[in-house]
Length: 190
Ligand SMILES: [Mg+2]
Image (tube, rainbow, N blue to C red; front, side, top):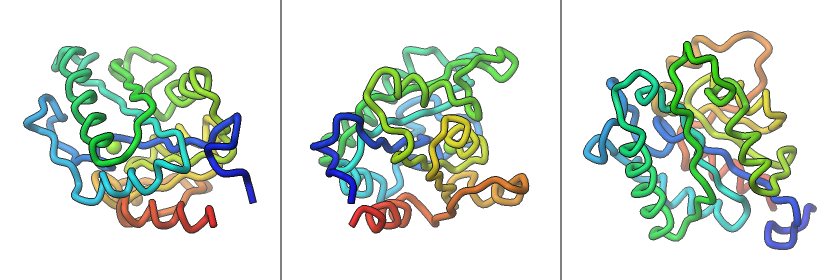
């Protein structure tokens, strides 16, 4: 068995998408704290996983690049969410967001692996023992593009519709929601 998280110099990480994974998706984007609705099992699931992983939230936030939202607003929403996770006994090492619109052709917007690579550079992350959880095929592709072997597509958020668009040959696990995904991941640790 691998050494426990606390004894490892290079840490396994959990990469979580935000919308459709931790909080509900909104058709017209999450634009203020009033739009944030946290799934009831999110905070306990993150708390359960926290002793075993560094935890990063990686989120595409194109409303900034589209001119619909000020960057300061995203920072405030993310900070409040992070504080709630910590108050519930969980950890968030860092939240990375991509502020660009699709046509900006940046290197951070998922399915590109830029945010994951940034986290791996900023923290000592062992990508080969890391996990990614998302509700979109582009999340899964970002994980695969970064070299993460364990990627989970949830059936919350956009997940059910995304499953129909899955390109052949893409390798990932499917779980009902963040609670069942946490259970799955924990079962691999013992
Ligand atoms: Mg999402």
